Each structure stands twice: as C-alpha cells, then as structure tokens.
Length: 113
Length: 114
Image (tube, chains in turn purple, red):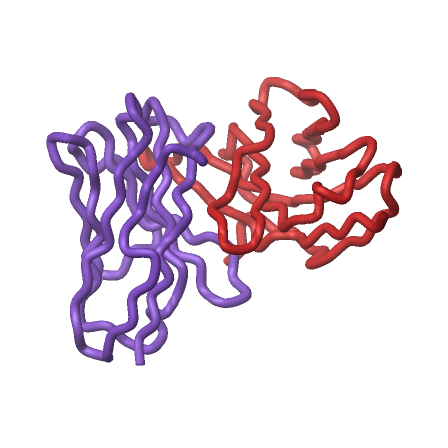
C-alpha cells in the first residue's frame, strides 16, 4: 500500500460527458501528479501540482483540468469525453516538487462508451 | 517523438540468473532517471534512481547503470526471482527553458521462469 488513494476505482460513462477523478496523496507529500496510461502505452505525464499551485504540465488536453485543494487532495476533471479517453488514470505523490521518487495510487479505470 | 525508449517489450529469464533491462533517451537535458515496477491492477512502484552526476547506483539486488555519452541506462537484477515478474518502466526528468519534462518509457515485461 503506497498510501495514495484514488476514487473511484472504475468509471463507465458515455461520450460527451464529464467526470471527476479524485486523489489523496500520502501524508506529508506536497506534490500530486496525474498520469494517463492507454492500452499498450506507457505512462503519459499530464500535470503536477505542488502545495496547491500548478507546477508542471505535460501532454494534458484542453478538455482536461486539475486542481489541488488546501488539504492537498487533488481532482482531475475530464470533459467532453471521447472514446479515446478510455484509459487508466494514475495519481502519484511526492514530498517535494522535483520529479524524483513518486508513490502511485492504484489508478482509476475510465471506460467511455 | 518518443524521448525515452524501451526497445524490448518483453524479456524472459531463468530464476537465479541476471535480468538486464535497457532504456535509451534522446534528450541530453534529462538529469535524473528512475525505474519503476508495475504489477497488474496496481500502480507503479518506485525501484531505484540515479542522478546524471553518477554512473552507477545499487540497492540490494537492483543496480542501475547510466552511460551519458550513449544516452543509455540499464537495470540489472541479480539474482532474478519469480516475484520480479512485472512490467518495468524507466523514466527521465529534467528542466528545459524553465519547464520540467518528465517522460516514461513504454515498459518491458519481465518474466522470471522458475
């Protein structure tokens, strides 16, 4: 158990809809990272928040947004969903804002039908 | 543009032998490299890392080697155990123009045969 929790575990929704994925980092970690893993693909870094502020951006679509709240939990919002957005979405956390050792949650599997 | 490449999608090794997983990168601004292990239905787990100022880092059965001139890193697992069977991802990070880049490879599936 990494100490990072993600909800929900599974999500099935229709094209055009909007969903919110939630992540709680390990106790004491200030950074939260979001990743997307599509079928047969590696992990694609989406975005990083550090202590409530956006710190780095990767290949995140404009239809996707995220935020980190004062209690350090984070939400990833995916809107106008397309079939191609079906993937595993991982959240990770780390103590500082460097891209060093990260602790990953179990992921949320999103299926868009 | 895949800046971090793991060219072997899979690898099979006998229990007790050495497993060598390879990773190549193209961007010389990467200055920190990591290996993660992933079991099915779980998130990746951090294994070992190396800074670009070093060429080797060891942690128990796991050793990572970095060859900056060749832009190549490798993970050695000695001796390999059946429990090491998993997908292994390498990752690279660095700053360019004040922006962090953090790139994962596509993974190598290791199977350790008993």
